[in-house]
Amino acid sequence: MEIVHTVENTRKILGQVSAEDKSIGFVPTMGALHEGHLDLMRRAKEENDYLVVSIFVNPIQFNNSEDLEKYPRTLESDIEKLESVSCDLVFNPSEEEMYPEPVTVKYNFGKLDLVMEGKHRPGHFHGVAVVVKKLFDIIQPDRAYFGQKDYQQLKVVEALVNKESLPVDVVACPTVREDDGLAMSSRNERLDEEERELAPVLYQSLKEVKDLAYKESVPEIKKWFEKQLEGYNDIQPEYFEIADAISCMPVDEMQKGKKYVACVAAHIGNVRLIDNIIINL
Image (cartoon, helix red, strand yellow):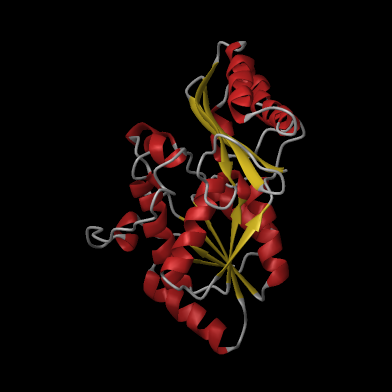
C-alpha cells in the first residue's frame, strides 16, 4: 500500500495504473475510519482492479469551527484498517496541497442544497462539491463509493457528476449499522456511555415512521415523530422531514407507487447525528 501526500505523485502513480488498463475504485473519507467505511472499500476492491482511498478533513465543508476542531484524526489506526482491506493507495494531502489558492468556484444545485442538511448547515454541500470535484479530477476513478447514511450528500454528488459530465459512476451503498441499529459514524466516538445507549432511538423511530407511512398522512407522522422524541430530554431534534427520494424535496403528502426518504438530524448531548430510512409506497 502506498501512502501519498501530493497531487503530483498521486497523478503519476494512477496514470500508470490507467495505462495498464486497470479500473480504479475510489472511496473519499475524512478519516476516523469505521466498519461503514471499510464496507465501502471492500465493495470497491471487489468491483475494481485498484483501490484508492483519500483521507482529508475538508475544512470548507464545516460551517461550525468547533466541529472541525473536534473531528477525530486517527491516521495511524486508519492506516492499519486500510491495510486490512488491501487498499492500494492512500491519498492523504495537506490543506495547502488541496487548496493552494482561494476557492472561487460556485456550484448551484437549485433547491437540493437549501433543504434539510443544506438549510441547517449553510455552505456545507458547496464545500463537499468542491472537494469531491477536486478529488475526482486528481484520482480519475472509474467508480466512486458513497454510503446512503449521508443520503442528501449522495444526491449532491450525483448532481455534481451530471452537471459537470464527469466520467465516473457513483455507487450508492446501504447504511452500515451497529447491532442496535445506530448508523455507523465517526461522530459516534464522541458519545458518552449514556448518550450511546440513547442514540439508537433515532433509527427505532424511523422504522416506526416507515410503518406509519402506509396508513397516516405526512403531517400526522411528523406530529408523532416530534412527540416520540419529546420523551427524551437528552435528544434535541433539529429537523425531521419526509422527502422525495430522487429530488430530496420535503413533501406534505405521499403517493402510492413512489419512493420517499425520511430524514432526521438531532443533537444527543453535544453530538449531532443524522439518519434516514427509505419508504417505498
